[in-house]
Length: 254
Length: 236
Image (cartoon, rainbow over all chains, first blue to last red; front, side, top):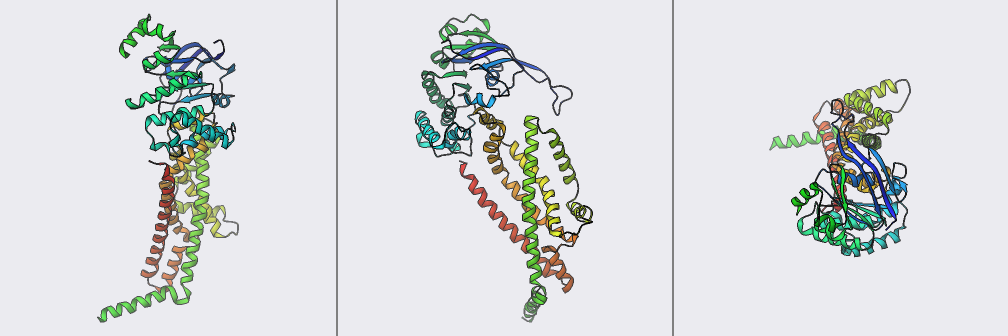
């Protein structure tokens, strides 16, 4: 576990403070991330927890540059994450969104094949074969030729995970993957993520599912006020919280 | 009884005067051809133009690039939407092409196409903006660049969303071409007008012209319905 896959140094993100239409002067400033330093190693399953608005989603989105950091440095597999090779880097850094964001005008299979084929990572037959394997793995082989609108939320999220996997990424970022789901569908998605964690792929998961964090992750990171407050194995963090903020947060969650 | 006989006779007489005498149906037929030609060509020009402008404007909004082009597009939109179509047509014919001998049909196509482009641009732009930002993010997160994401993910959905509004604009365009007579172009409306001035009887020529427009519009609506149905297969 010494193979560093992500290295973050002094990551800061400030919203606002810019000129914008419909605003007099500058928009109000909001410091979301105030300097984050962290190393993620290959095979890590990291859960990011914290009160809403603490910056955990912003942190995740900075990693693949869906949010452009204000300051700081991110290295992914030794390459700096900046505008220059962002498209190449993203191919190896999958993302799963809270609202699935499947492409509604494509069939499920096409959702999985489109990017690998378009980016010439695979030819079409190979991509389709891989898509079928992945659909099998997420238990939705029978849905290959339907459109996403006909699927339940849980099914859509499983397809979204398969879509991320279709790129054969080294890391997958999960941005609150179960927060938009009906309670009875949360289980199927968490189950799939648990299986995924056992395959050894590196995962960063922003979540409110404490049970999942405790059971599946090997590191739990507690973020509050734009800073990492705790970075511990789950047993340690949940059974013996020292940080008063973490204590307060956990008492509300559990 | 006699009243109805007179009425029928009058009807036949009027019909003959409007369509048969001096082969006047040819006037209507040629007028219809001109109207359809202008509409079709102007629609294509307008769609191409509108699409390019919408692309420039949304790309500028989202990435901050293409500043100068964006400014040009905004100027174009302001001028074209801010002046009457008829004035634009007159300017195009009498000023821009005033000193050269040129066929009137291409002039009308250019004028109507440029005019329609401004409206189509805003239609496309609203369609592109109606797609949730999550779609762009999902496409980019897979490693597609901005152009690939736009063409593969955003535009197919946007076009589907704007189809009703686009159809509406095409219908407006068809009827707008009826002012072509102002540059002495013999379109369908002008044909009716010419016949009226020969027969001194306005009823038949104008009602006929109105009915022909109506039928074309109904056909266009039909076509649009079929296209919408095809694109709706991904809906629930």
